[in-house]
Length: 610
Image (tube, rainbow, N blue to C red; front, side, top):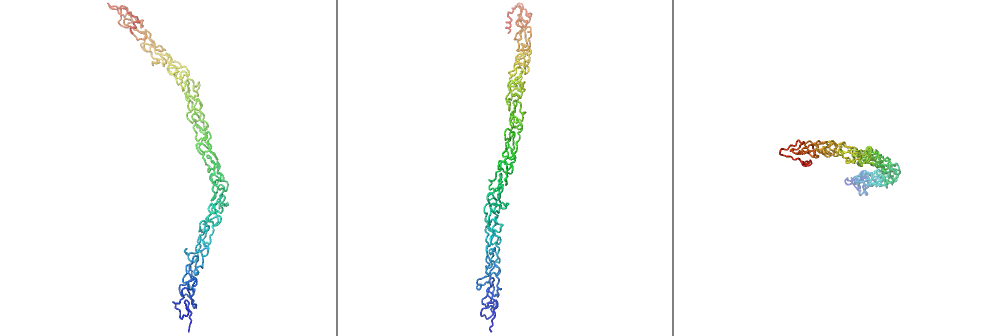
């Protein structure tokens, strides 16, 4: 009897099979499953999302679920059954376990997937920071453009806020947007660079949204405040330069700041008015940034708030710099000009008390050769022997005139009856420059009784017969002494110089007051010097005026010493010897001899004797 058998699951029973299918030959083919008892001669392909790499599958559940990251899909399952995962999940999609069609699970906006990034296929990844993933199935993130930022997982770029800009792409958060640069402004969203420069007269801090920011407590900037200026593109107010100030707002240029007025200084730190007055000892000519702009120079001074240094007044000086007053000129110094830095010495011939404006000339009768005289006492009296007629002399004008003397302090060259001098007194002479009355006495041997003698020649020689034994005589001292003669100019009563007189020589006599030696008269003689009178001639001798003593000649006898006293021996007598003084000394002639009496006259005898 014919018996029909049910085809067991997992096997493929072809039509007319008369025996149990052999396992090796009729297993359900790979990629298919065969439910038991099936009358369908074709195996059933494993459903999409599964695969089979073993034969003999009985049920769809025996098909292996496609692993995550893979997809299992075929367009023609009968001819191309799925015997293994079809492939990796495509970029932009993810494939959970059991994925059939590869595009079943697209990445949502804000996510992406890409094998080249090392992603697994089981899930999409958030779009990275700095990028955005705008559509489904994004496989490559788009770089966030300039002016925008993209957080992680962004599906669209977010614009940088007003007041910021993004100059580079791929910003990942709002904080990476750059605050609008100082001095610039950024109006609107999504700026790639500042909109422009801040306007002049305003300043723009970072993040400013307007070229003329309101004065909102300095958050974005504001109008340029007083004391400052703001050129276009200012980040912050710039203080008016040192030496200037400003009490107005909205200045655009430094030139609009006001120059500090003379006498004041402006430090330049947002000054809305001058900082103060220039310090004493200094002066400010305008535009000063310091209270000590210009130091008062030597010879000058300045008070507080001065616009110039004032020269030191007459009578004052200032050797230093930076002083507010001058110093009174010291005594002995002359400050006769303004603006002196040193106190010059009082000039010679003058004296200068403290604070002198002019030099006071030394009065007539005085002078000073040196500089720096302090008062009248430093003007010395004119030197003795000189006169000082003019005021302000540095030396005496000249010597006192001849015939006068100047004792010191004289203001005339020929003083008379003055305490400074007078006419030369008698007994003295006064050449030019005589200092006192008895400076030049007439020397010994001279005298003078005349006033105003001018030189030694004005002194008269002591007259002959007189002597002048001291100086300054007004008359001869006395008469020349006996035994001496005074020829003139004798300095003693007994001169012995042979010029003005001498001791009376032998054969001469010199009575008192003798002017020259006198010959002893005939019959007298002097055989020694210094005779005041002559002695009688000795007997037997002849004493003739001007001659030496001679013996009475032979044949004669002499009763006296004169020529008349020479007598011949009487007749009948003779005398062979000379020097007989008595007739009795004549000898009688011998018998047979005769004697003729002398016939010679006394004069002839005298001549014969010679």
